[in-house]
Length: 212
Image (tube, rainbow, N blue to C red; front, side, top):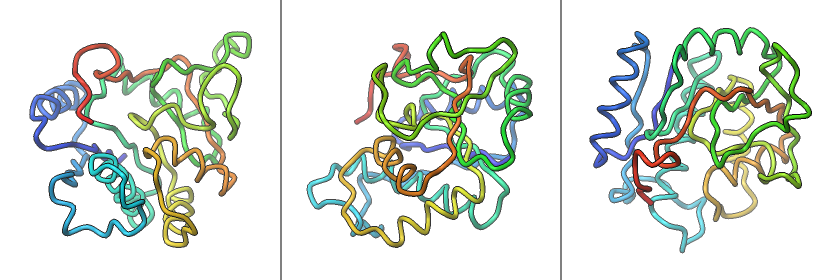
């Protein structure tokens, strides 16, 4: 499975750490996406509000690039941001999780971003994949995403999102995880969360400081 890593190339320690994790799990099919916030002059940023931050634009464009690659080349693709920490036995658990994933899924979120989880009273023994509603809930979140540090995207989903981006009727002024909630609602995407989660953010657990 193709893995895309959203990476700010000045953060060398993050790349080193990810490569160590990939080596540990014998992950070889990956691509680092390094759209630089300091070099946006060669990018089309017309879809964003003029006062939107360069760091958020670069992150969004990196995710959009991954969607295009998945649309054009792959059945699905796994997108990581560069502060991810994989759980022990990540590969085997991930394989078990996707075996429960419906064939018509659009996205599967693997991480514990913002400490968002399926409610405990909804959890079922030996069930690891749960469909997530597209709207905000009283226990947190603004819809289908729980940050964009680690998620699986199907070809069909990538195609729909790319088409949506190409026909936007508004300017983007939200970080990509919040914007993706809007895109999911507008496209009625089928989104799932995994429980237990198998990825955490280094900027969330204190390993890294935020870069934006």
